[in-house]
Image 1: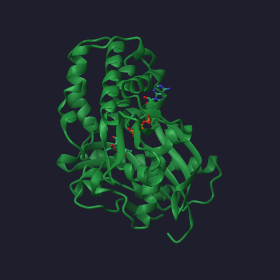
Image 2: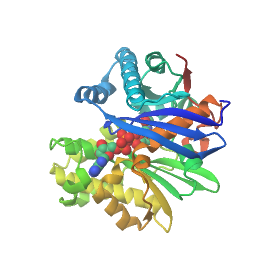
Image 3: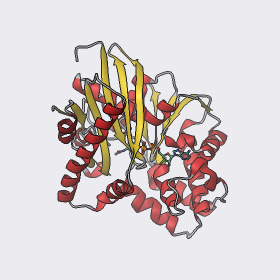
Amino acid sequence: MNKKEVFSIGVMSGTSLDGVDLVYVKFEKNNYSNFEILHATTIPYSSEWRQMLQSAIQSSNKELEKLDVVYGKYLGEVINNFIYNFKINNIDFVASHGHTILHQPEKGITLQIGSGKEIAKVTKQKVVCDFRTQDVKLGGQGAPLVPIGDKLLFSEYDFCLNLGGFSNISYDENEKRIAFDVCPVNIVLNFYANKLGLEYDKSGKIASGGNINQQLLEKLNSLEFYKQKPPKSLGLEWVQQEILPLINSFENDVPIILRTLVEHTAIQISKVIAGNNSILVTGGGFFNDFLMERINNISKIHIQHVSKDLINYKEALIFALLGLLRIDNQINCLKSVTGASKNHSSGEIFYP
Ligand SMILES: Nc1ncnc2c1ncn2[C@@H]1O[C@H](COP(=O)(O)OP(=O)(O)OP(=O)(O)O)[C@@H](O)[C@H]1O
Ligand SMILES: CC(=O)N[C@H]1[C@@H]2OC[C@@H](O2)[C@@H](O)[C@@H]1O[C@H](C)C(=O)O
C-alpha cells in the first residue's frame, strides 16, 4: 500500500467466546510500533451465537459451509455498526481472524469461519482473512500467529504472554522469535464457572476459595503436551479429549476444580517465564487477580502495567497488522514460530 499512514479495522473472535473484538487502528508504514488504537470495543455474543459457535465442532462440512456464510454476514453487520457508532470514515481495509471451529494441524486441519467474501459484500471494504490455512498447508501449526506482531510492536519486552482461551507466549532466543501455546486458561475456567451459572469466575474469587486437588494437579501437569518441544499449539479438540475427561474423573466441586486449574496454569506459565525479565501480559486472564497473584508468586517476574485497550485488544490489533503485511506481500508468518517450511505472507484478500 503506497501510503505513509494506514487505517485498518482488526476483528478477532477468540476461543473464550466472550464476543467479537474490534479495533480501529492507525499504523505508520515506516515504523509499525508507532501504532495508535483510535477506537476499540467488544460486542458480546448472544447466547444463541455462543451456542452455535460452541457446538459447530460437531457439524458436517455442509453445515459448516453454511455457518461460514451466515457468520460472515453477522461479522459484516457488527463491523458496519462499529463504523457507524464511532463515525469512522477513513478505512483502508478490514482484517478479520474469524472464529476457529477446528484446529488439528497435525492432521492438516484448521478452520476459521466468517467468510471474507460476505464481510466484503456487507461492509463494502477490502477484507483480509483466513490467516492460518496456508501455514498449516506448509506443515506449520497455523498458530500462534500473533508473535510476529509481538516482535514488530512490542520488542521492548522480554516476553509477551497472552491469557485468553488458551495462553501463549513469545520471546526472542538467539535472535529468533520463539512462541507456542502454553496451556488452556479461560476456555476451561469458563466451562466450570458456567456450571455455577456464571459467565466466568470474576477476579478468580471462586478459585481462591477452593483447595487444590494435588492428585489432579499432578495428572494435569504430566500431560504429554507439556513434554513436547515447540512449535506446538492447542485447540478445543484437545481440551475435549484430554482435559475435561481427566478433570471429570475426579468428581470435585467447582471451587476445587477452578483452584486446581489456576495452580496448573500458573505452574505451566512459570516454567517458561521465571527470571528477572520484563513481560507484557494481555488477554482477559489479566483481570483474574487470583491467577495473576499465583503467576507472580511462582515466577517472581516483573509484570508491566499497560493500557486496558492493549490488554483487551492486542490480538485484534495484531491481526490488523497481519492484514497490512499481507496486502504489502510482506512476511506475516514465521517458520521459527509455527514450524512451517518457510516464512510466508498468509491471508486471503477479498474486494467489495
Ligand atoms: N475480571 C475478570 N476476572 C476473571 N476473568 C476475566 C475477567 N475479565 C475477563 N476474564 C476472562 O477473560 C476471558 C476473555 O478473554 P479474551 O478476550 O482474552 O479471550 P479470547 O480473545 O477469547 O482468547 P484467545 O486469546 O484464546 O483468542 C473471559 O471469558 C474471562 O474468562
Ligand atoms: C487455532 C487458533 O485459533 N488458535 C488461537 C487460540 O487462542 C489462543 C491460542 O489458541 C492461539 O494459538 C491462537 O490465537 C492467537 C490469536 C494467535 O494465533 O496468536
